[in-house]
Length: 138
Image (cartoon, rainbow, N blue to C red):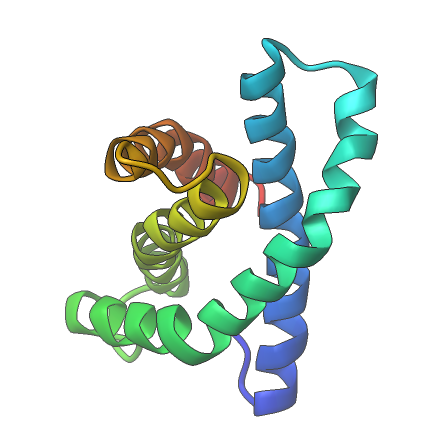
């Protein structure tokens, strides 16, 4: 876990790149009906805008809120470090996935009378991928 603000910024940047790129690849693959080599290149185009959004959300909203929620469940002084890390990671996904899914829905699926349904569907499709990617890889 980062101990200084500088470490927190660097850690957040690394996590944003790893998580956002993976989820962008996943969503493009869903939209195109499967994963192809071309998708990996296409994902770089969306990485910039989604990465900036994710970084800002994580630094100023989701990160502090996730830690507050996590530390109400896990005790840094009593629980093993892996438990604390997993709880913080889980809370981060629970906050970031709906927020980033909303941004992706608004930017890439359009705003119309079905925007709420599109957002909910996007969140439900993204959550298992985001959670597993966060816990087992990132």
